[in-house]
Image (cartoon, rainbow, N blue to C red; front, top):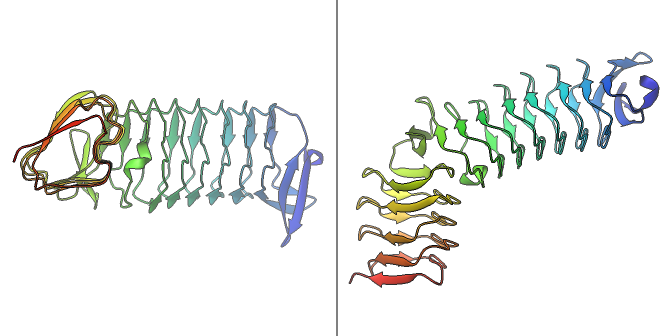
Length: 318
């Protein structure tokens, strides 16, 4: 198969530059003419529509940017423990890839590395992973559950954006902050779990709170109906309910003093009563809530820019 591989040599090792063959199954050699193969380069196997399976040898340490881009029939990729980086868009739009096991050697998963792998149902992220890039698993519409290990220190924007089958996320021991934008348009997500060892978050009934349980950090966007916010909450975080399109009602207790930016943006609430205890409402707090027709609040509350949709009737209590 080496005759179908175009390679470049540097530092006494080879980088695969381009695959010119048409085989369905490929086992990449660990060396060519006695020179070790170390890297799968930029777009080396991109658009190989005939490729259904690939075995990567232990000599390889990095899967380069867009290495298997749009290999739409690729169903399996055996990734060895020698790999330390799966770079940006490495398996982007591999539409038939069904599972991914990230080996114990991998430190980084790049931007869009597995995005649009629409048949990817499961992913195992090992404890070696330190960073997960922007939209790494975005639009993996068949992915149902994921565990993010404690080793992860950096999480990119929208890593699970539009994973519409995702029902649960386990961040039991995660120490990195996880933004509410991580789960944009995850319309089936009903549970987020944080373990006792988590340093930043606590969870209760599948809802994410700050460690001290004073701030409501993230409400799963797939939950339906109404929600009564617990009386121990003093703040509703930025984007805490963002995109909860099935949230039709919310009860805010008198313990709450602050509502964050875009906290309820894109929710389906039709009316909201904001207690006198609320001192500030952030910018766009209820923006794009197209069903919101009535808001009741105190004149003393400081209201951010575009906090409410233009069609909502605002009633002040004093």
